[in-house]
Every structure is written in structure tokens, then in C-alpha cells.
Image (cartoon, rainbow, N blue to C red; front, side, top):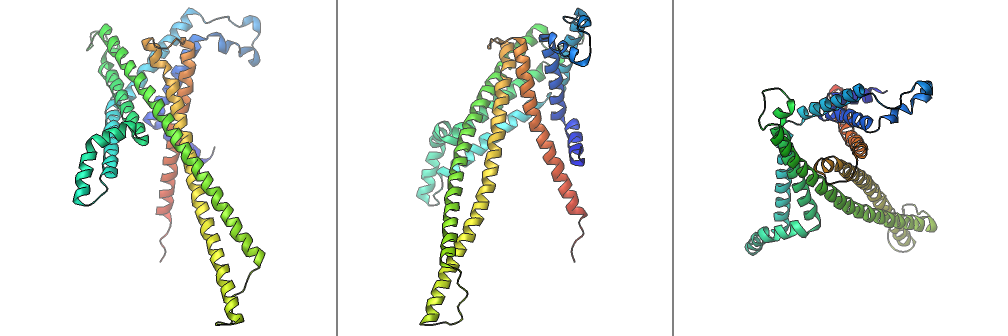
Length: 357
């Protein structure tokens, strides 16, 4: 394990999101074990255990222990999400302001008085229509609503936190009403995940279109660069002319200038190709991350869907889906921690580097 990976692990294990994902991973594994108790038992023969001494199923006491462990892990995760609804509502509002400002800037681009009045007219109805029907507008609108629904779910979790503690004589809603509040909260979570999947799919399609356009542009530029380089090679390199003016010297100068123009186009084309390749790498990375998040949201839909009875999956299937979504979202947190460690290391190296006189 490298030093960077070690520091990344420390960052992940002490980060609130990382700890919450770790507890969720353990919770999903515990729930999976309760749903399929014979699954780990099938591995015991490969570890050297005699088949005759392997139990066929978990004992009632072990099931009770795992059930209690799952409940405690679920409660432990709620400590990290206690006031997360503030973050979700804030993100929803920020996305709304960003989309509104962008739409107003696009509609009111004319700086004349007539253009300003026209922009003001479009900023109301035009912005709403663009937000609901425009390409990026629809995507932003789904993200805004997804964050808002997610905030309502976290708000329900926070409101029922005291009742979930299970302390005798301490409660806010009462057990029955708290369960109803959480059922409604799970509905809001389900809506948030549906919108998140739709927004992610929309964005993946948009980014995929940009990827294809960039690849075509790179191919066109590479073809042009090869053509210009081939023309120079075919005609032969011409040294800088030593004789200026008419006659033979003028002809040599003309050929040399044409050659330099072609070489300049080659240099500009190669530089543009490198820039486009860097942009292409960023777009491919963005498509992967957005697609991964959409898949995680799709898998997560089984948890609230099962709680409100909207999905026909068994508890075991939901456990597998929960395990998969936890792994995908945990990778996202792991990568963010690694990026933070690398930025801190780069900043430390910059400070330690002696200043040049």
C-alpha cells in the first residue's frame, strides 16, 4: 500500500460520508445474511470444515443477534444524516438559482433598451418553458426536484430520530405515528431516486453526444494534419531563401513561405488535437461518473420501494441491490477523498519548494 493510498484510507475512514457508507455496507451484508443464511455456510467446506458438522441454517439466537445488529447499524447511520435535509434543500435552491440565472442570461443577451425589455419578457414565461422543455433545462429541473424530495425524506428522518432511539418514556410522535411519517418519507425518497435516475440518464445522453462530436472533430483534425504533413514531405523541405526579390530567389521564397504556412497549420492542428483529447477524457470520465450514480440510484429504489410496497422484490433481492448501490456510492466517496489527499499533497509540496531568487 502506497503512502497516498494509506492517507486516502485515513481520509475515508474519518469522513462522515465514508463512515456512513461503511456502516451501510455492513448493514446490507447483515441483511443479506439474514435473507440467505445458507449462503456463507456453503463456503465453509472450502475452508476445511467437515460437511457433516456444518449447520443447515442459522439458529434462532444467531438470527436475533443479526437482527439486532442490523437495527443498531441502521440507527448508527442516522446520526450522520441527522441534519442532512439542510444540505439537500440548500443544493436544490442553489441549482434553482443557477438555472434561473443561466436562463435569464441567455434570454436577455441584447444590451440595447429594446433588447432589455425583450429579455425581461422572456425571463418569466420563456424561462419556465425553457426549463421544462429545453434540453439542459429539463435536466436541471429534475435535479432540483430530486434534491427537494430527498430533503423531505431527510427531514422525516430527523423528525422521527428521537422516537427511533427507543428510549422508554422519550418520544415525539409515538411509535405508530413515527412509522407513518417515515413511510411518507420513503415515498419522497423513492420520488427523489426516480428523478435522479431520469436526470442522470438525460445527462449521460447529452454527454455522450458531446463525446461523439469531439471524436469526430479529432478525426477530422488528424486527417487535416496528416494531409498537410504529407504535402510538405511530398514536395520536400525547402531551406530558408538566401536571395530575396525576383527571379529564382522569389520563387524559392514563395515555396518556403508556403511550406512554413503548412507547417504552422500542422503545429496548430496538433495543439488543437491535444486540447480536444484532454476534453474528451474529461467527458468520458464525466459520463462514467454520472452513469455510475444513475445506476446506484436505480439500485437504491428497491429500499424505499420495498418499505412502501411499490416493488415486488423480496428482502434478499433488496439486500443485494442495497449492497451494489452502497459499493458504487462508496467508490464515489473514496475517489473524492483521494482527490482531496492529492490536492493537500500538492499544496504541501508547493509550500515546501524553495522560492527562486
